[in-house]
Image (cartoon, rainbow over the protein chains, first blue to last red):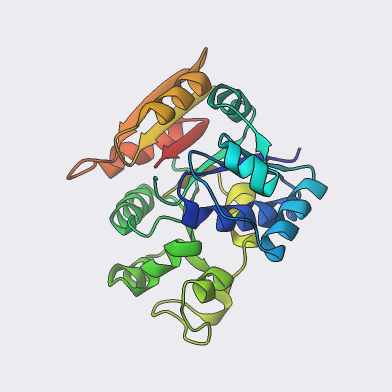
Length: 100
Length: 105
Length: 57
């Protein structure tokens, strides 16, 4: 059975690479998710938007609890409570990089 | 009985813990795989990095793309590594699939 | 399911909330890495004994 993995980034410098890492696991046939938590990132470049779309094509998703990321980069809004429930489904949880 | 352990490193301030956990696991007879990604690749410049690579039963690799994005020359292999260990995120997949325990640092 | 929570720094309110939700109804243990001399041998034993280890920032 495919593993479920969720990366959580709290620092803007680590968001793009968490998405790239998630994509790397998605191509290894895992369900890969990312959450941008309490951090805001600028508008994605074409490269990062492509990564986002590939993650979605492979049944993953990128979430954020920040409205700015939802509006700017079309990430899916998630609350802390919803994230906690989602993490309960995960086989691997990756608090990524450094704290905010 | 010792289980195998995979360690995924993305925080550039964790070498102390990477060394501590790896040495403790190997001392218990564990096989360990460590994969450095993104700013974690900065740890290739620490004095401990070649020491980590030299520990028996420890497989060390880094994300070559991260290494490049972090400002390093991919043609310069960090001391202790071999060119085939300048790898991709598939190494992270291998940690998850092939190792019994997983740790993020 | 036995979950091991490892803390690399003091958990803030957000981390505490996530830990609370993830842990609900499950057996959990914790280990503080944010000390001068962590007992790595003990940590490795705890990792081996857990079904899942989450190493928070």
